[in-house]
Structure formats: C-alpha cells, structure tokens
Image (cartoon, rainbow, N blue to C red):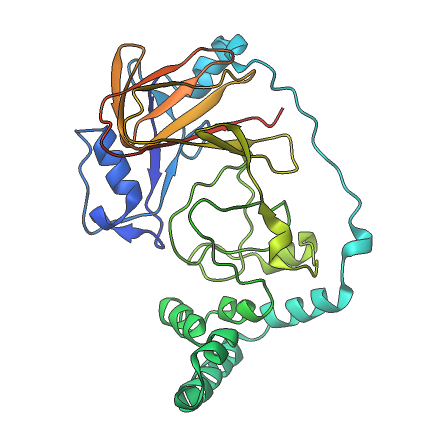
Length: 317
C-alpha cells in the first residue's frame, strides 16, 4: 500500500530542488509543486499527529487504517526498557553545561565573537590537522548560521561525528545531540517531546532540558551500530531497543527481481533510487509503502542499469 507522506519545511532544510526531501516528494508525486523559496527539511513516514501519512489510493490516514485492521501489525507488543542511570551522571559536567546554557545571552554573543576573532587571527599559523582539532571551521560555519547562539559552544562539549555513507548511529533518550549538515535516514519511536536549547529558531526550554539530560563521558565509536547481513543484498541495523530497526537493501545493476524478507511485524519501505513493479503497480524514487506483517513482497526491477536503494523500518522484535 503506497503512502502519501508529509514534509516539514523547517529553517534548516535546503531550498527547493537542492533538498533531497523535495526531490523524493516530487519524484513520487507528479502533482507536488516545489517552491524554490522554501526550505524542505524532513520527509515524515508514519502516524505522527504532526505529519501523518495517508494511504495514497483512498486518502485514509495510516493511523485509522491500522486501528481498523490491527492484524496488519503482527508482533508489535514491546516492553519499554528502563535503566538506572544515576551512577552514570556526572554532576560536574551537568553544572558546566547548565552554567553555559543559562549564561546571559549578551555575554554569550560577546564571548563567541572573541573566540572567533582569536581563531581568525591565528588561523594562518595553524596547520590543517590542528585547525580541525580545535574545530575552527565548524565554529565559524555554525556562528554564521546561528550568530550569537549558545549552541555554538557545545561543539567543545559533545562528540563531533562525521558519518560515512552506510554508517549508522544510535542516540538514546535524553542524550543531547544536534544534526549539523547532510542527509540521513532517521528512525525513531513516535513522540512529540523534543526539548531544545540551541542552534534552532524553535522554542528553547533550558531548565527542562538540564533536568532530563544524561551526562555521559564516552567515545563516539560506542554509539555506532554495526549492521549484520540478512542476505546478500540486505544489511540490518538493530539498536539496543525494541521500538525499531532499519534494513538497507541494495540491488545491484542487472538484478531482475528480489523478494523482501517476510517480517513478523508491519514495516515501511522507502525507495531512494530505482524503479520497480510491486503487486502489479509501478513505484520509483520517493515512493513509500506500508507493508503488513508476514506479507510476501516481490520486487521486479524495471530499471536495471543502476543500483536500486531502499530502506525498510520495522519493530526490533
């Protein structure tokens, strides 16, 4: 069942057809008009009330369809994991972060300018490796996008991670983080409880954020997820939670067809590149399908001159 999905035009998106969100939406929906003056940030697939998906043929919401056909979910009863985290909290780091985030905004802006001026005056004396180590270019870029924003300082408190194509990272609840650039597939439990403190024009709630955050000192590599091969064409990324997992499916040029692995729970499939026939219907780049539990899905590749790339999200059960 093909879905009609919602898009979010947040300020941090890319303009018009420069955004992969806009190009995916346009490719799958011929009547979608791309506004080159809008910033397209996110393509939402699922039942979130702020951006619900609809069955494309009937215009019924996915949420309503599931409620009226609960058997399509299959095995989705999962338990929420609870952890005792008091022993992992660093009071010193918490206090440092709190002092920074609650500092007078004028003082923050002044200190940012002072730091950037110092880096600018000495940058000609620094070699490339040292400039990268002190994140001089990153600080300059963030300050250009968010002048005077206290979030610019957090690059010296957080792990700075550059992800390569095909890599995945798991960020658990109450872990502070920010996406800085690039495109990615993000899978998360349905919620509307994001708390912000910097690098955003949206509402900031520093006191609540400080109260719920986990302050853990760890190397970035511990957050990366190593996939396992489900078959020759499928890699599955399973985080240490039951709510979700993601499969990356890559069909090489010349592969005429492929049967998706049957899942014991419902799933959502996104076609990022390629063109295929599924259940006698044609789907291409940007198409999003809802797949009921235990359904057999045969993909007949219609354009075999390039790899076909798909991502499938499903409960980690």
